Amino acid sequence: MERALRLLVLADNTDGWPTDAHGRWRLAQLVTETAPDAIISLGDYQAVHARAMAAAGAPAVLGVYGNHCTADYMPAAGIVDLVGDRSSPAKVGQLQLPDGSALRVLAVQGCVRYKPDLDDVLFTQNEYAAALRALPGADLVITHCPPAGINDAPDPAHVGIVALREWVDLHRPRWLLHGHTYENPARHLYGQTEVLYVSGCAVVDLELSGA
Image 1 (spheres, one colour):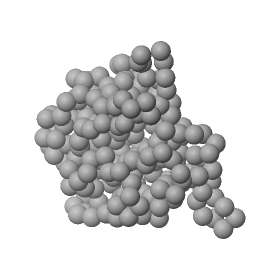
Image 2 (cartoon, one colour):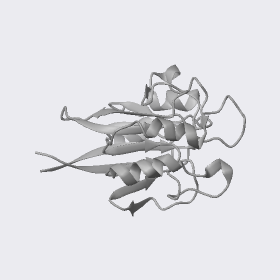
Image 3 (cartoon, helix red, strand yellow):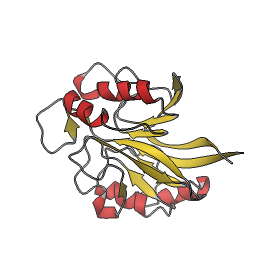
């Protein structure tokens, strides 16, 4: 039997976010229209955006830090931090599904360090490698920055994560969600992995196999 997990995925900007007459974001409208199982934030937001996510009325709101996220972006609104430590590049955990089962998730935050700024969420390629090589496989990757060679760009601020590409090649997850870069196809296949790029907002249905 096939069933789907519906995610309202947000990344990098507020393009497509509904607003009221006063210009305030009203993500509840999207939640009502699309009935997602969860909101997933791919980052590069601030606390004001997180509060709009938390007020949207979705069953769950989860996310990772983008490189430009302020430290209070998720804690201020009670959003579930999928990595749990702003100083750590990545973590494998579980996303609870509506039927009570769980989906194994690799969460990756920040982007490759391109400047000495200590306030942004930035890691060297070696730091990503040290974290990712120790992590097991997962079904779904939720990452701000894409893997190297997959929807990345040559400029230092948007180069992809080499170790994440190696992890994907090794573990072959079913899906990979990312933001951070510009003007990429919304969906494409990399080997057996469906890569989903989001800028602003998108409704993503993941077809789950199960009894």
